[in-house]
Image 1 (cartoon, rainbow, N blue to C red):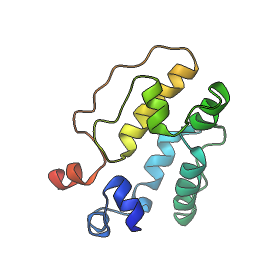
Image 2: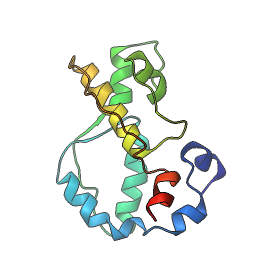
Image 3: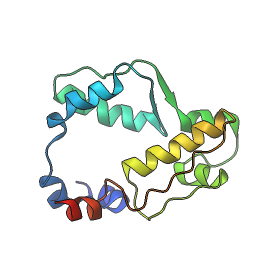
Image 4: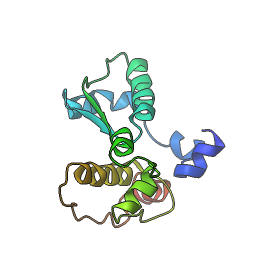
Length: 140
């Protein structure tokens, strides 16, 4: 794991070595998508990361249509910062912790998507539920 990535999400090589590889869950993840719209903030990153993992598992990417909330945010709010944290802050949301986690990032992206479609936010608190190392170590 590159040091810069570890600083973002807190997951070290030692942490990751204690968990099954993506391929162990690839079919389950593909079933979850089941042809649904692939949507993320900075979708290019997720498409590259997940696409590579599905390819390594010998599976096609399980979605065809895509929506990137970051690109949509930039079109809707030109000149404003479009990263997940500043766009979320513009909607009145913030991370509960300092590290990125997939669950919290997805929830923040949902809030942005709802804002972009002029829908009210969905109240939710993560209460420490995350994919970060603290949770996984406690659960192990």
